[in-house]
Image (cartoon, rainbow, N blue to C red; front, side):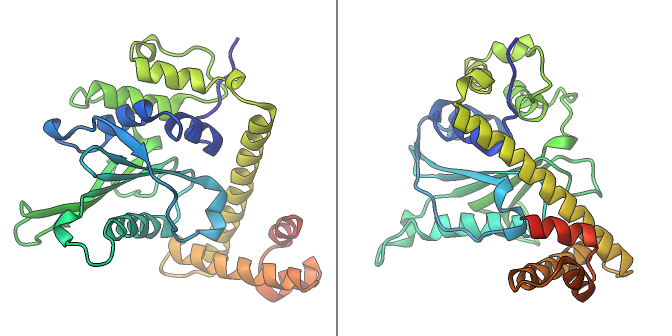
Length: 292
């Protein structure tokens, strides 16, 4: 019986989409708002570009950058747990890719559109059931007038439900693959295997396709995610205990500041108890930070 690995993990995500352009092309054509006459025909991978690091979630972000035959640039990032700075990171990365298309002295008309796609394995917008969020520059008074050169798409995988008949079949199948496949999967739906690209992605998700070193990295990845989720839960609790009117986001930011302060004190050799008293963090959280 095959054991499948979760494609949302960095080592699996990059093996599928970072090494096989045909699979990435199929995925992007399925989930991005591209016109029928503007589908991607061919892709080439781009070297990594400098993007701002989100320290508290560095281990949970994986990215793939590529360019199609028209020169359009696509940035794909997988984020396990949402943090507010992720949207800014995506905007920064897409903007950087847009600017770096030109060498000094070249004309602006050579610039090609940049699409940023963020796949989120948690819910960040609790005010709407919508799972697909498309951002672009528009004229406020006349929204039909738009600038298409920079667009961002965020997909909340936990909200996705393949119930709407208006959704494109290939989009539904790819998003089901991303949201449903994991280590508990025993049998893959037959309709997934009817699409050659998804069938290949399933094969690349089988445990047998990975070396012992890759499997160790996979396990460490989820250990890191679990630790980070625990820390974030503590940060939310700290913020809520403060009774801030701004709610969870301010609590998260306050928790991050306390965490950074705690790390600095621990690095100076102070005890767990002393750091907990100085920062207001719980002993359990400081103990976890000390072990890291």
